[in-house]
Structure formats: structure tokens, C-alpha cells
Image (cartoon, rainbow, N blue to C red; front, side, top):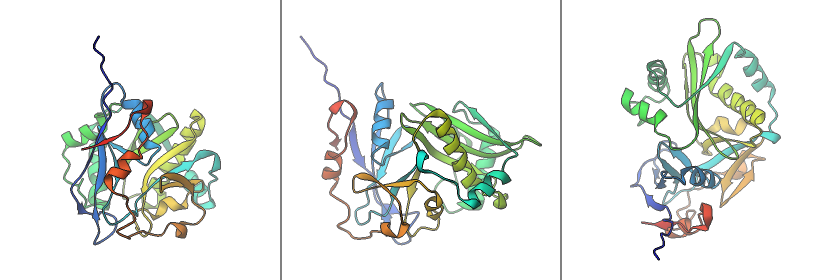
Length: 274
């Protein structure tokens, strides 16, 4: 009798490239493919261990000489809006939320291009054409939604977030918005609204991506109460951002083989490194 054994995901490491968050540093990522019938379970499991999704790939920072990037999430039950966040909610009360299937539109792409040119002109995504943008939105093997925010007065598309639905929360894969509306603090508004969505759905967490101590681009995430970061293999409540100082020690990152061996997979399988 022939038996077919389940194949454990294979993990790989990217070549080093300049870090987009800390000047003079090099970044490297540990990644695996997200595909097949087990994609949903794998995504749920690895998201709890600091991984993020990009199309059909799951990745986590694994820099050779740095461990500054920390996966961040908000504990919805522990979140209380600050006075400034309440003002931001009120300031954007005219925006209507519209949840759709992960399908790209020309209107989304126009807003995306405007956002990148204004906020990330030197980033690697600025040259994405409409087909690459469509792939970013539509190539998802798991349950995903596009959350649009439109002005109720003129129906203008103001902000967009590609959002994954996990078994324990919402993961904000990528968001963009009208860069000219700086007073509306749209990035914060999108997070606040996702906290509301998660609470209404009975989901405990909102995953924000990575928080990097010392990076101006990522500092705003520390302004949310109930924030947790994944550090040294576990989620820790952030009481004081200064407790998580940027770790640039070359011994701060375990060897790749050790990292992979400590990854928990659904079904009790063991991770493997190629």
C-alpha cells in the first residue's frame, strides 16, 4: 500500500539588500510559498509568529546583523482611543466604508500611484505598473478583502486597504490614501476603523505589519494603546516603546537553521530550510 506523506513548507532566505527603514543597514527575509489546500492554515499559524503575506509568499525579517523589525498587532480588547484619535475619527466621519472582493480597479491604481509619488518616491514600489498592482491586490490564496473609504459628498475614493482575514484577527497587508489630505490623518483613521471591524466581528487582533524602533516611518504605530510586538519568539505588551530599543548587535539574530527549527507549523509538521 502506498502512502503519501504531507510535504512541509520549504523556507528560503533572500539576498541582502539596503534596508528601507534604517539607513546604512542591510535587510534579509526568511520566506516560504503560500499555496495549496493548506494555505489558510499556514497563513494563520505563521502570522502568529511574526510573518506577513505578500501575494503568495509569507515572509519575516531575518537580517544577519540586526533584529530591529518587530511584528506589531493591536489587542482590540485593550485598545482605548486617545483624545487625538477620537478627533481623527470625528474628522473623517464623512468617509463611508466599502468592503469588496480583492479586485483591482483603475481608480485604486490612480490613488496608489499618487500616494507613492508623494510619500515613497524613492521606494521599490514606485515603478509598479497597473498589472503589477493588480497582482498585488488579486493574487491571494486566502480570504482577503479590499476596504475602500469614499467621500459621501462626492463619492471620491480617498483611502484603500488590502486586508486579510485570519482566524484571530485582521491583517492590514497594505494601505494607501490621498496624500494631500494630511489634516485628516488617514493612515490612523484606517487603523481605527479596522479596530472597529475586528471588534464587530469578534476578532481579537489587528495586525499592523512591522514596527521599527528608531524609524520615523514606523513611529506612529506606538501611539496605539493595546499594542503588542513579537520579540524573541513571543508576543509582548508594549508598555514603553523605549524598552524595545533598536537592536543592531550582530549576535541578536539566531542562525537561519535555528530560526526555521523553531517555527510551528499546522498539523505538527517540521519546517525545513533550503
